[in-house]
Length: 84
Image 1 (cartoon, rainbow, N blue to C red):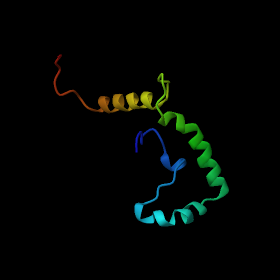
Image 2: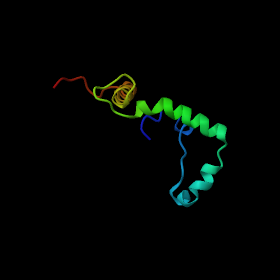
Image 3: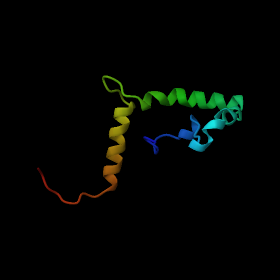
Image 4: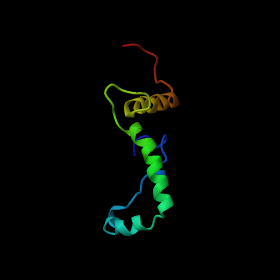
């Protein structure tokens, strides 16, 4: 999933294995009203960060993509110091 290190997807989504799709309604009915309310609240706070906006905004998908790339870049030392 995109931005896995930035989001706890379990807090606002439901993961269903492909072989269990036929029983998805049973899975969804297994959530209490309180669990559903929490997932909706968290999802309401997260969705803007997963979409691109024009122009780009702080904490939108473009911003998060750049942050993720910068984080990954900082973990890896450059192979060579050269300019092109």
